[in-house]
Amino acid sequence: MPIAIQTAERDQSFQLRSVCLSDLAASAHPTRLAARLDPALSAATLAQLQKSPRLQPRLAELLLDNEMDSNGSGWGPDLLRGHDPRRAALLAGSIWHARSLLKLVSKPHLTALVGHIGADAHAFGIRHLAHAIANSLIAEPEELAQQIEHDGHACLGAWLNDSSALERNRVLLRLPVGTAAETPAPEHSNASGQLFSLVVAHFETEIPVI
Image 1 (cartoon, rainbow, N blue to C red):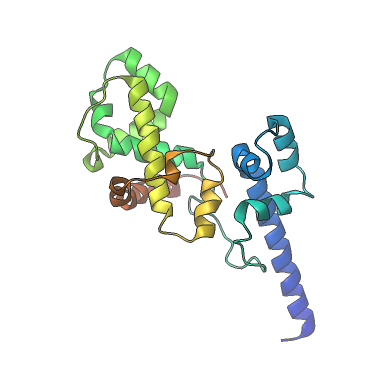
Image 2: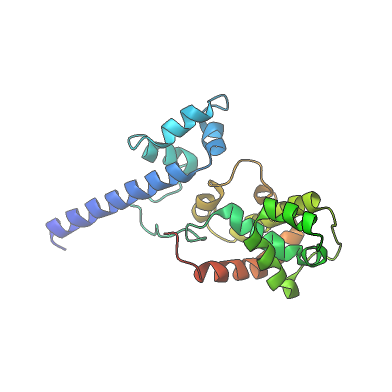
């Protein structure tokens, strides 16, 4: 291969790597960065660091523990195609607790629940009632919202565990430290593939984020 072509390809790979790392640093949840640097850093300081084009590649490497190939190969859209991982978790959690969603008919309760999880997650869960996991019903909207978020995040973490460390962390870094995505239980591992096949299929019908 001519030297000029090799040089151009190396330059292109370097530029791709730099852009990808910058995007990752900018989109990481501030608690992830604080955990790596200093938990005492203020939100304003963290935001300033994440916005710095000069620092972004270094911050991303710190967050990833140098898991990315040095040439940036294989770096394409993340497993959620750029969609918000919290929203993905709420969609999955709504399927998990769809039987409770169906029984929650009081207008004040519905308003409270939708305020926590969003109207799209509520509708999505009911639409996929046939795939519901939880049999026990939760009547209290705040408790139901908490369980939807917990089980949804746990399913997300279990689903990501089937991927490489790099692909898993590219999604997890956009969530705050300490969600259930970090500690899925066996029941979440058993259901995650089925639930996230529905979530990903839903995302594919939407306009891609990236």
